Amino acid sequence: MTGPGSTAPRQFAFTTRAHMAVDDATGEPIGLDDVDTRVGWLLDLITAAGAELVSRLWQPATFDVLAAGRDRQDRRLPAQGHVAAARLGWTPIYPDGVYVPSRVTRVVTAQVMATLRTLAYRDTAITALSARFDPDTGVVAPPTEHSDYVPSGFLRGVRRQLAARSRRDGGAPAVPLRITEIQGPPRMAAMARISSADRQLAQITMADRELVLTVKLPTCPAPAGRAQWRSVRLTATIPEHLHGRTITDWHLPTLVLDHRGLLWRCAATELVPAADLESTTMAMGVDWSPTTLGAAAIVAEGSGGLSSDYRGWTYDDRGLGIKLARLQAEGQLLHAKAARLTQLSATAPPEVRAELEAKIAVLDAHREAVGAKRGKVNRELAFHFARQATDYATAAGAQVIAVEDLTTLETRGHGRVNNNRAAQSARRQAVAALAHTAAGVGITVVSVPARGSSAQCPGCDEPLSRPGGYHTAWCSRCRVGGNRDHVAGVNLAKRALLGRNKPTRRRGQTPAIRVAEHAPVRRCRDKNGPTPSRPRHRRVRHSLPDVTQRLGVNPKQHVPAPQASVWDTVKPTPPHGNAGSRDTRLSPTPATQVADSMRCT
Image (cartoon, rainbow, N blue to C red; front, top):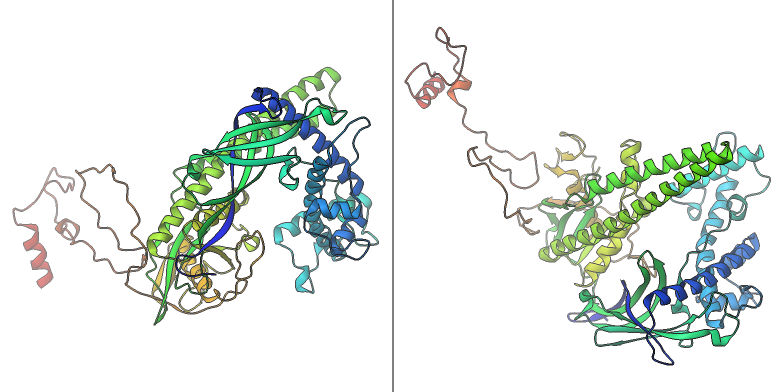
């Protein structure tokens, strides 16, 4: 139900850490280091059991069952992973003498089923691509049906794998290949998704702005009986940014270990203002820019159709993009050094090989540290962009934010370094952060087709010209233009307004508009978007004359030129000893009179 003042539930994630631990049976305090050790034993059991189950199920018959979605009795497989695994008889095997509760087995099978179900799509795509692969040319024939379409990035990766196998086997395979034939089983992540279990393994409560998690942990690396699994009560503080929010339910977290110890990856359900996509009359389009993370523009719908002032907003990343580029280059350099040392160690003497392996370990540790730092910067960049974009949309009165469909967006044509740098940007993380932040104020984020958004005119849908280079766009027919990212934002917002009645909704994803419709967007002088904020403490050299600023972002509007100086038009012969310096005037006659006399003649 939607309407003014209505709310809707939505889930979000956050992280926290425990600051106190006690034994649930005796109430005695437990050190956090001991808790980290016991959680490590739990993760070791889950990881080993999951790896064993994945390697045992790594065969084509497993993916045939998952693709069909039916069990042996021709019943539909349930969505819960541990229930589907139990119905199929897929259970992990533990070492002899090790006792593991059945609820921990649920956690193992749920994580394995989530991984295999994700790879089932890849198995189907590889089978279709290998049937159309030509080993002589290394080209995959285009699909004949729409269901066989795959993203171009996924296609290139599979094509490289098929080419490598063709070179290794010396020809094309007799039958289409499966995923189990071109790659090995995936590694299991060291984590415990205890949300798939019930109260016998873990439960969570909230009291006085604190979360209390009660979970069973082993007391030794290889527990032999039920008595060696004891409940521990962990207490963590709720982050400050969640105080005052209408949270209706707290879900069991996922437990992981990092360099600081035990980390909770929690989820919660809260009530947010409900958004009505069909009644949207104003939209904001966000274009992913190669120079910054994103730029936006506003489009409104009125009695005269679609209109926009073509004034855009560009996100200022505060130098984080440059920092990310530096960290990426550093990580690539460390990877290249480690790869080169690995090649040298393969043929080196034993004493030299040991020295090289020690250097490789140091390089790998540095590379992991750089990767962790990049992850933190990407998260900070994503949420800072989401807050700035949401504030801009709220000030403009937009009810929907349109972003480019990332599955159809591919960076190309800017060189190997810039293409790789743009591909490594945290766009998907920024979309998730934007959807989360915008939902808190009742704004819906939808994805629209990206093709042609910065190359076509929003008014006449004709190709745009580039009079000022790559970053400018201009339509001589409609007399509109400006920054190409802002023009792309107008196109994206237009597509969201035209397709608001036909969105495709999938669970866990933002609503998607698949078809790009066209309607002319006229340029209006009404101010639809808010005025971008300006720095309050800008340093200005008062000795220099002020430069007249252009209005808006349209570079083609007429700006009167300043009055010409007489020294730019009159060039009399300089006196003896003067080399033509403009500091020496040749006549006491005022410059304005000279200029006027020249205009009259």
